[in-house]
Length: 100
Image 1 (cartoon, rainbow, N blue to C red):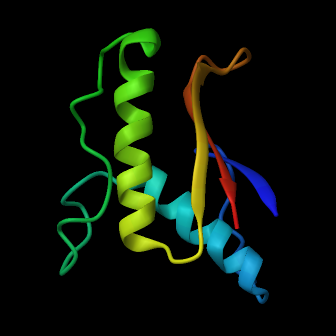
Image 2 (image 1 turned 180 degrees about the vertical axis):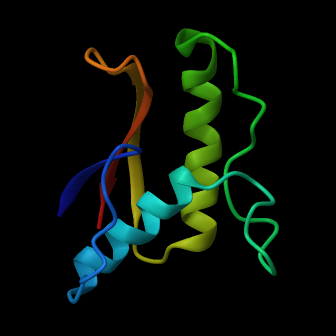
């Protein structure tokens, strides 16, 4: 099953299915800064992307997200990573397209 997960998505705290738990795991990973999780300091994304243009970081970010998801979430393949600014808020959004 192919799914799109964005950094703006809300965590489903009542996830009961395998699919919903995998979506939550990926969502947590793309919202976590590297070194932020106690006892799991190697989990998360680097903060080196801050203040860089979307066009510059998108390809590098795709490689990092693929590596982090592959290392931490079983049975998931990252197909694409898309970065953009939200039209209404101007927030930086990361959309990850995965196959679960």
